[in-house]
Image (tube, rainbow, N blue to C red; front, side, top):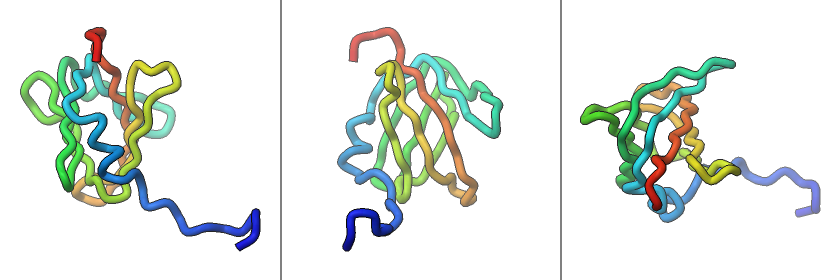
Amino acid sequence: MGLFSKSKKDKGSPLSELKKYDKKAISYVVKRQGGEETILGRQGAISVKDDEIIIVCNGSQALRVNTSGAVMATLMSGNGVDIKGTDSSGESVHAIAYYSNLRQ
C-alpha cells in the first residue's frame, strides 16, 4: 500500500469508544437535516447498548441509532457529542447532543 492509496471505508466507531458516552447527561439534542436543526428533546441522557445508541429526553425516546456504522465524536468545544449513523428504518441520521452544565 502506498502513502496515498485508498483504504477500506471506515466501519464507524468501535463499541468500546461509543461506550464512553454512555450515561452522559444532556441538556438538549438537535437533529441536523440539510441546513436546518430541529430540537428533538431537552433534559435527558445518552444510553449506549450493544446494538443501539438511545437518547431519552423527559422520559421519552428522542433518538435511536444503530451502533453498527455509527460514529460519535466529541465537539471541539467539549460541550457535546456529534452522532452520525442510521436508524432502524435505514435512514441516515445526524444529531448533536449538548451536555448539561453538570460536571461529567
